[in-house]
Picture 1 (spheres, helix red, strand yellow):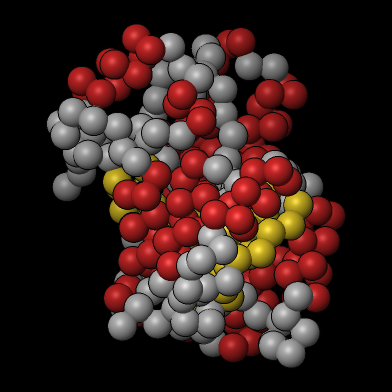
Picture 2 (cartoon, rainbow, N blue to C red):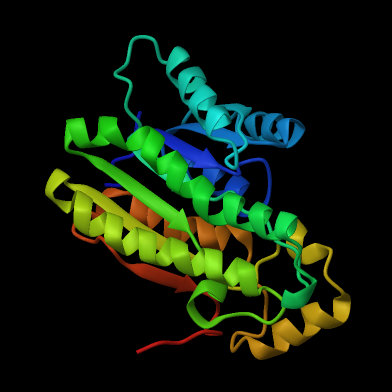
Length: 253
């Protein structure tokens, strides 16, 4: 039903948090998953945790803020699949980075890092793997944005701008690739139990919890479920859509 058996899925940011949960969910559903992350230790931990799952999981170093690293990652992926076509069936852009601070405290270096990691990086990952999808007239692309990109977030102004850009990129790419039967969709998590949230002050975490109608923070696996839907056959007639997974924190008409 899901149609993921033996499909090749590329997942960025698979070393921890939401990215790791996505790797696990796709591999559990039969996909062959290749995780790319700057955290090589975490990447290998993901591989070890996935050892007993239905699908195969491999990992390699990937810095999505560096185009040369993306190109090297692509070569490594296909070196491991010598007898298969050089085509990714699924791309999931889950890697991201942020630091909560006032906008006026943002240095040019900080701004570049946020934009390169959260906007330019995912764009370059898609640009690197998309040609083979177009040639095959088939593929699924899922970008992980954030509800900060839909409604804004205090202390995350540049991050919100980058994630809003990912939403616009998703919609435009979906229009451009629809004739090639490539589905492009976007998942927007709300506050989620990840290492990034864990380092925030406890008072902030409590305020976020109270603001969410479900009165709890999301678990990474709940974001991964939305990605699984978009990666599977269940979404074959869906493209250019933005799905918020936020416990009702951000509702839209």
